[in-house]
Each structure stands twice: as structure tokens, then as C-alpha cells.
Image (cartoon, rainbow, N blue to C red; front, side, top):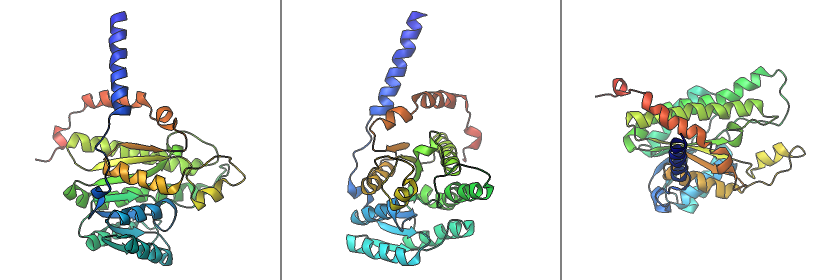
Amino acid sequence: MAFMNKYVLSLLVLFLAFYYYSENEEFKPEMLQGKKVIVTGASKGIGREIAYHLAKMGAHVVVTARSKETLQKVVSHCLELGAASAHYIAGTMEDMAFAEQFVAKAGKLLGGLDMLILNHITNSSLSPFHDDIHYVRKSMEVNFFSYVVLTVAALPMLKQSNGSIAVVSSMAGKISQPLIAAYSASKFALDGFFSSIRKEHSLLKVNVSITLCILGLIDTDTAMEAIAGVMNLSPAPKEECALEIIKGAALRQDELYYDKSRWTIFLLGNPGRKILEFFSLKNYNMEKFIKT
């Protein structure tokens, strides 16, 4: 028994060492040169910074958000920064028909798709949950269901290009926190859905990567206004956060953790879950689902 315990412990140590410290290919900005990228929620905050970074790298970019005027300014600056091309399509992700049509229009503008960056959220505030079922439904529709709609619409193009999806989530989608029940529910849903799809892609040999981006507090105007007078935390910079999201997607990482605290990845990485997921895959026979 002592031998077995020592053997199992050694395997676990090796597994964790590989998971936390194995390095993917080194990121180079040239990886995005000429790539065709969609960025949602790109009129401000993290999404806007993502678009600007992509522009500097020479990517083709299509951005979306609700404000046509703001998007025009973002596109203009992207072109100034060196984007291979830049376009916008204004609309709301509360409208699932728009979400689906947006991907089709963006694909035509770009001539295909290499990367889909899902970043938009509905407006939220910090407050105890009472009985606002409408707000919970809206949060789930915009923060989660529209992500599914966009992904379904984009997958045919991404499969052709062996592309990548970046799903911008939050620490609130990994641990429970007060005052954000509806927001947190939508972020937990992202983890459940996209992590499951990632496993399916692995088993079915679908070469489309999914990177779940777990973010802490970022210094966007929206976030700073929301926590004012309620929380006393030091935020991380949105510019650096945006770059890390691009890197994670380009390097096809499963998960990306970005937070002011360097302890976040160790405390939230959940090695127990990773180990259980690894061994659970042995129980599946996926041959009946593989198209010949």
C-alpha cells in the first residue's frame, strides 16, 4: 500500500508539473499577421484594446458592439495602427438573429475566419439578488447563449482554417462571490459548455482550439464604476489583459488566467478537476460520432 501511495503521488506530481509548467510555442506577434479575426464587445474596455493589439500585428479585424459611432472611431484607429483591414457591424447581442447574421456578414467581409474572440457582456451592477428573474434571463442570454449562437455560426469557417476561439470569462465563473449571482451564473455556464466542447473537439479530432480566459478585476471604466464604494481591490491593466487574451488564443491554450495576484492560477487551476477529466475520457467510445 505504501508503494502504491508513493507511485500514485509521483504520477500526480508529474501530471501537475506538466500541466502548470509545460510551455507552448513562444508567442510572436507575426502569428496574427494577415489573420482574420472577429472581436465582440469592441467599442470600449478590453475588447477595444484587443482590436488595437490585433491592428498593430497586421490582422484583418471585424469588430462589433451596440454603438455605431464608437465603433467607427475604433475602426479608424485600427487602420492607423496598421490593421490589414478593419470593419465594424453594429448591433446588440440581445438579438440572437443579429448574432447569427453578424458572423455571416463578418465572414464575407473577411473572406473566412481564423479567430473568434467573444468578449461582450450585458450591463451589470453589484447588488444582492432578490427576485429579478428578468435580469437573470437577460444575463444568461447575452453573456452565455449569444456566445453559443456566435460559435455555432463561426465553427464551419473555423474548422476550415483550423482556427481558435477565445471565450472571455471571469473568476466569478470559477468561484462563488456575493452581489453578482446572475453574472456569475452566466460565467459558470461558459465554463461548462465550452470546456465540454473542447473535450469533444479533442476526441473527435476537430482542430479548433477553445481558450477560456479567466480574468480578475480589470481597470475598465465599466468595472471601476461597478465596484466604486463596494469593493477595495487593485485592478490589473486592460491593455496587458487584452494582449494576454490574444496570446492565449494564438498559442491554443485551454485556459488563461489573468489577475493582479500571481497566486490565482495555482489556487483556481483546480488540478483535481483536470486529473478527473483526464481519466474520465478513457470511458468514452467516440467512434460512432466520427464522420467517415
